Length: 319
Image 1 (spheres, rainbow, N blue to C red):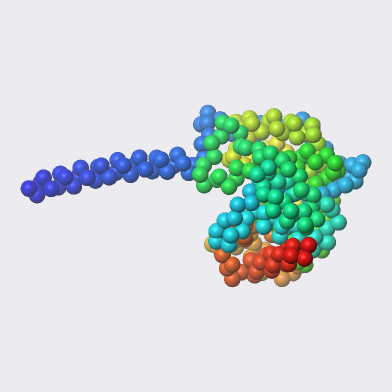
Image 2: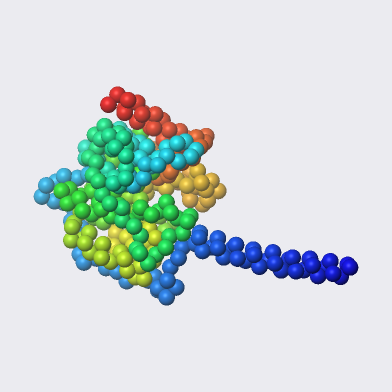
């Protein structure tokens, strides 16, 4: 009887291991990026041409560009990317920008959201979402990046000689007073990722719009085997403009990871190199993080954002 019981236990362990293996395989299939293993993913792309003049074009108009592809409220605060974009608009204006602010909105964005953005004196432009390349199936955990290629519409804004694209989850600090210095950079320009020497953070970049360049980008971005692709625009952009980037000071795109990764080296670097360094903090202009998606934790950086959020709400009430 004892032997039969042991055998039964062994069988149960084998069955449990078998089904655990199946569940793990399903989980991996859903939550891992799916790419063709035959793809080399070596950078083999070059732009047809790059306009990198230091002087503005004939019309001289310049603009900030923000993308709002989704205005669905998320927990725990019931806020959306549209709310975060409104804070960004307010903080750019508070910093004294003299440039226009263009907000690209997906066709499904509500009229209420559009009216709110227009009330902040922005130019609202409707665009279509650009999905990741067809032969790339995005993992579940990266679904929030499904709109990342949509920001490439910024290249079509040819009525402007130069634009600075900024992700909606960034904001300008209240003491920043030279925000328009971003437009002095030659195109293309961006800040480096933390601890990187040749990988640029595409949450903010400076470009000179060109329909020809956009058409070239639109054709080449689908060749996912020719660049290190992770289903987002940054892999493509880093390859496409490889060796052509102009480096933007980190103070214009300080990447704050402390809400989601408080023990991450990048969070430590932000606090060490910027926030806890009083002299350097004075030079800090823009911070990059999805603060609207996190509980109102006790953090000086978070409190600065929440104060700007309250200011934005006050401005909208009085608009």
